[in-house]
Length: 289
Image 1 (spheres, helix red, strand yellow):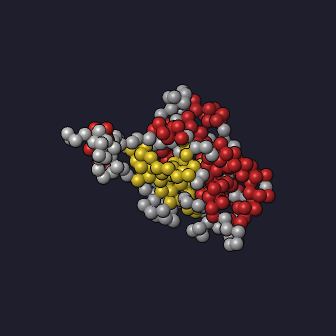
Image 2 (image 1 turned 90 degrees about the vertical axis):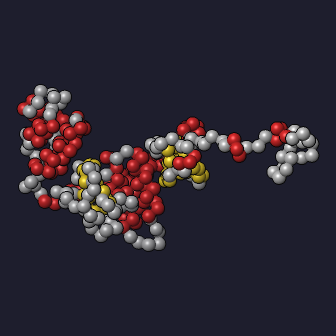
Image 3 (image 1 turned 30 degrees about the vertical axis):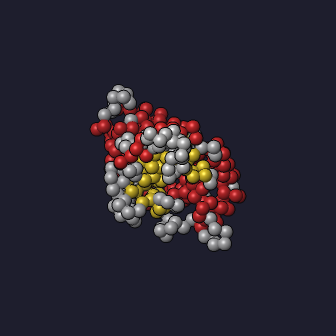
């Protein structure tokens, strides 16, 4: 098992300190250790990235070179079943042995053979390939299976996806997930974490989808018409695109942008000395007007 201490012992070979480590030294640093598996190499890479996040791509390039000759089943393919990756982060290792693909169409995750063997229940992904998990629903299986590597919010959303996908009258792979959640200590821990997180957030609004704002309203640049929900309650507000995922009512009220009233559309009945009934001014209006 590669640890931070392992890297600290070989670091002086290429640099005086982590602060003085250069991008061109990353390959040499990772190459100082004898790895027993690709998983160990990836763990070492993640440790380097944690120390120097700006070298993430250099770390990935080094891993790709160093993994030559290792187990083919542990090497992530360059292209996904949904198409080639797009963008700088179109193909990225988010956890050791778990790769995210973003393509022009759909997207999802590829897992290594060792990750596949570690999943504690049988599951057939939507694509029919046990190494590829699409991004909308199947990813919940990965999060639940390796919940100790994900935070409570991730587990909460994964459990929510499971509840949405599980159909009692249709036997499928989600029944295996249900049995694991119900019958094992690890599964019950996932349920407990998801429930506790949901309880802590129940008084807050959760950010949802959004659409553009009519520019004629004069909203600041970067603002969007965003939907929020809290249980069965629904609310929309014009807020900044980077609004947090969870906000209280007070926070949402404070950050909501509202257009200024149009004076041309307002009517002050006192200006006419009478009351305005929506059609005309009442008879007690000032006859001089």
